[in-house]
Length: 270
Image 1 (tube, helix red, strand yellow):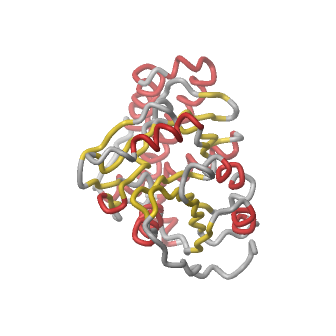
Image 2 (cartoon, one colour):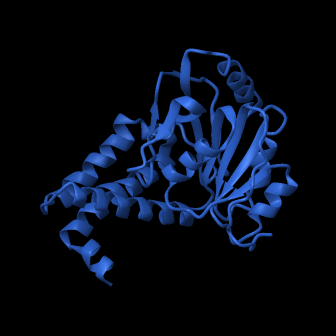
Image 3 (cartoon, rainbow, N blue to C red):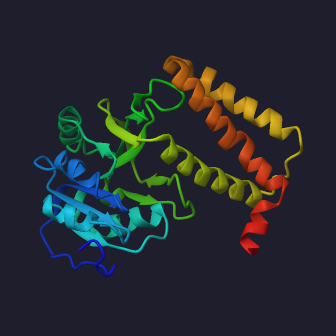
């Protein structure tokens, strides 16, 4: 099942549901069962929106009681919008495979969905990086707009990552957090931040930003101060300092270094 052709799975017409949980996946066989288990029993259905995984993600998800839809990945916004367009439910809760909903959050979501004024709700996240629960540095409360009234929300399809939701109506904020086990190892952290740094460099290039040599010094210092002081990364001690230094490198130095060296254009030609 894990290597089955990536074709859209047929969905059976059904009466409108109250809450559907949607999990975007790509090779998440190790995470998906626990994620589904935290959603079963209080949502009306759990749908795994899979980006043609090459591992056993789809089989594990089906065994755990989720419906599975396979859709080739283009970007996160389009994946989420495709789910909004396809699923017949009043509310959709988007969850990542490395996130866990707690019983307290489940109860708060059920109560929030009775609010007829709101088009969506922001949910805080508690981020765990290499086993450490982050208290500062921008990693808490880390609000995410994930609970959406389906007919009142759409995604800005111009964004490839860090997608933006456009709501037709008021938003609200929940108190109970999602638990986000986003980086189990430093290797995972470096891999993802390298991707984000190159994406940021492309955005700067499209905006016509032309960095000067002093940017290679000042931008990392600004990012370090922002993460460790302004966003209170100091609350996480040496762990927080390490992450602040790494993010200063990836977001303050790498994008400008790539632009100054014209490495983006050389890589695209290569």
